[in-house]
Picture 1 (cartoon, helix red, strand yellow):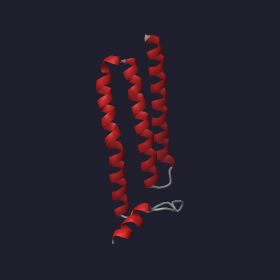
Picture 2: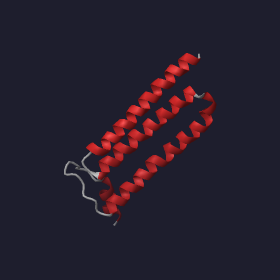
Picture 3: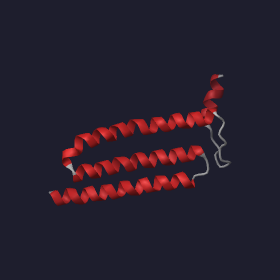
Length: 112
């Protein structure tokens, strides 16, 4: 049983590290700040959760603490990126010409 958990934990940790690497690459490759925020948030949230799950398989005694850390990341990472994106939108950060839809501008326009 320990070898199965060790293999599973190693696979989850490698998958999490791969998603974190892809999230870092997305920060460099995306054309504007809004796309960078989305790429960074989605990939790092999934990568962190996979990495924590892998460590929980490797160290079962730490599972409760790692679960709580994962829960914290799951709630704070998307909320913080949403706040950063709204702040960037309000401050007038230039969008990429490839961005064709701006739902926030549409929602603000309807309220005014």
